[in-house]
Image 1 (spheres, rainbow, N blue to C red):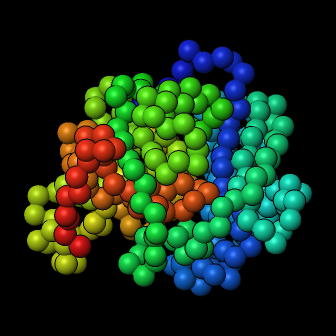
Image 2: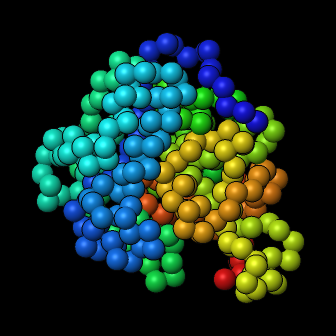
Length: 282
């Protein structure tokens, strides 16, 4: 399933990327990550965010935006620095770029989290809250506006409303589904599911078994997210098509995004009050 520019949206939209600025990142997790060069600044996975925005600008053929985003990474970080109100605190940054190459950065105070949750999930990291993960009742047609993150987010807003999510503070996510009943992504996160390969549990200890977790391929229509790229690069997961029929009510999953890092979740197919936990092998 290819991603093509949609024609149903207004011509005035912007490309965006949201990330966490946190002064605790370099000291707390820089040496813990195998790809530590990504985590040597307070900007979480900054190289991936710059690449993501650049790829979007190229997709939409925005020459001025492309030129702006091709600047040196250190210069880009210095530009972002000018928008940080207090460098001693954690911030949620929303980078917004228009077709003329003009860039603005919105900074909002970020909730306090354990910096280690920004790393690939581990049994050593405590996660006190488990998110409720629902499945959208309607389908979304993949396009350039689902592959790339833009301000044209009507499909995602509608999916959240259908799932009863009224506030971004709610610990609830909805999985967006394409017309082939394949999971594309979450409305604000990348999802990860346990592998469905027959016999995987039996062979999981073998050297060639591969990752325990899977994430939908971009061919299903979802966003090329930064934490998704990080999870794949670190070997936490591999790509595999996941359909709605593959999901089990109550099963565990993971979610991730560029502000919150990695979050544990639980699938709710029967609704928030009827969902029953299904024990899974550890």
